[in-house]
Every structure is written in structure tokens, then in C-alpha cells.
Amino acid sequence: MNHNHGQNGHPQWEPTGQGGDWQQPQPQPQPQRRQQRRSKRSAVRPGEVAAASVDLEARLGFLRRTYSWLLGAVFMCVTMMVMFWHSPFFEPVILFMANTSWLLVLALFIGFSWMGDIMAHRVDSKALQFIGLSVVVGAYAIIFSYLFVVSGVMVEGYGVDGSVLFHALLLTLATFSILTSIVFITKQDFSILRTGLIVMTFLALGAIVAGALFGFTLGLGFAVVMVGFSSALIIYQTSNILHHYPPNRHMGAAVALFSSVGMLFWYLFMILGMDG
Image 1 (cartoon, rainbow, N blue to C red):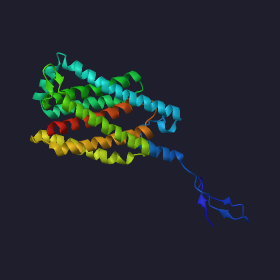
Image 2 (image 1 turned 60 degrees about the vertical axis):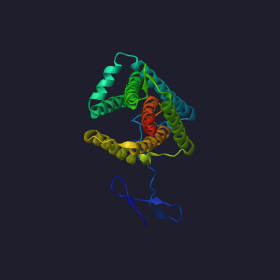
Image 3 (image 1 turned 180 degrees about the vertical axis):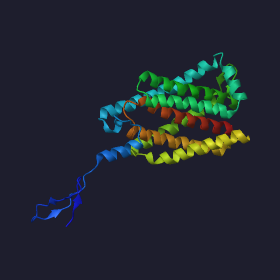
Image 4 (image 1 turned 120 degrees about the horizontal axis):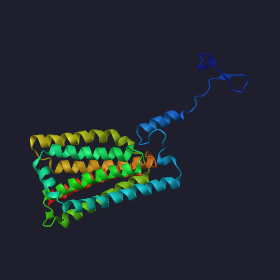
């Protein structure tokens, strides 16, 4: 005869309804524990629900807002770059970046990007979320401007040689579209990539720091690896947007995607520049 213990420590029994026999009660599902496990890998905070749990109209609205803000961030980045090129701050900032340690430049870039990302993801004020997005976009606008200068595509009048830039943009758009389509078509949850991406982040940062300290270039192989890394990030973040982001965090979702797309463009641009 089976038995179990209740909250008071005494055995509990349940009739089966068949000849007076008794059986152990079947364990009941525990949705709260499952929800807790999901929240550990989710962008959802206490009191929020994931967009995947809301009705279809609200879910589609969240996706439309996310990708609209992503497109807006791209245009904002281009606008900021053009304004920066024609501002009196352009030459002093570029000279500072060229004459100082790359580790300091990288630390400033990561610091501003991290601060903007936290604002876009964690604060409730839409105005502060927008400021966070603007900080991230501004950091990328400056680092891209420096990339254009040192790669030699900047020409007189602060224009950009169109050939390398055009092909890098085209490849970035094609890669992003393919990766996004894969996630939307399969509807798979790629949270399993999280641990590997964290490890790769620290390895990449370690390689960059080592290159800056010891004066060696990372080369084409590293750039190819980083294209793969940024592609995996896009898959992971797109999956998170589908499965784990709350519907009111579209600006945070757009920031996450923009950062990954920006990194993808950076290394594709470097590869094409090396090839040229």
C-alpha cells in the first residue's frame, strides 16, 4: 500500500473508487516553478509577462515596435555620423582615439554601450529608455567614424568611399535577414546558446586586450570568427525577443539587436577592407 506525508507529517491516503483500495495522490504540476525556471533566462522582470504569453495582436505590435526602433536606430546612427564628421569635435576626438591606448578607447566604448543598454532594458521611463538607445547609437557612430578613418575609406570632405561600405552594408543586411528568417520560421528557443556566447565574449575581449598590450594584430581569422559570433548573437537575441522579452521592452530589444548588427557590420567591413 502506497502512502505519502502531508504538510503536518501524517500519512495521506486517497480512495481509488475501486473496492475501497487506496493509492498515493498523484503529484500536481507546479507552474510556479516552471515560470521561475523560465524567468532565469528571460528579460522579464517580476510583475511582467513575456510577449510570447500575450495575445497575437499585442505580440505583433511588440515585434513591429522593436523592428521599427531598430530601423530608426540605424538611421539615427547614420545621421549622428554625418553630424559628427562636420562638427568641430571630429578631428580632436579622432586624434585622441588615434593617439591614446586602444584599451582606453575600448573601455569607454564598452562603458557607454553598457550604460545605454541598462537604461533601455531596466528603467520604466520611455524617455530614459530612448536616451539609453541614443547613448548606444552615439557610441557606435563615433567608433564607426574612427574605423572609416583608419581603414582609409574617408576621402576629402569627410565623405566615404562607396565600394567597401556598400558591400559591407549589403552583406550585413543579407546576413541579418537570413538569420532572422531562420528564427521566425523555426520558432525555436535558442536560449541554449547563452553560455557559449558568454564564454566567447570573454575570449574575444581577452584576445583584443592581448593584441593591444603586446602589439600584434588579430588578423583575418579573428574577424571571421567574430562574424560567426555576432551572427550567433543575432540568432540568440531574436529568439529572446520571440520567447522571453516583455511587450513593453521594445526599445531594449532594439538596442540588443542594433549592437549585434553593428558588430557584424564592423567585422564584415574589416574583412572586405583586408581583402581590398
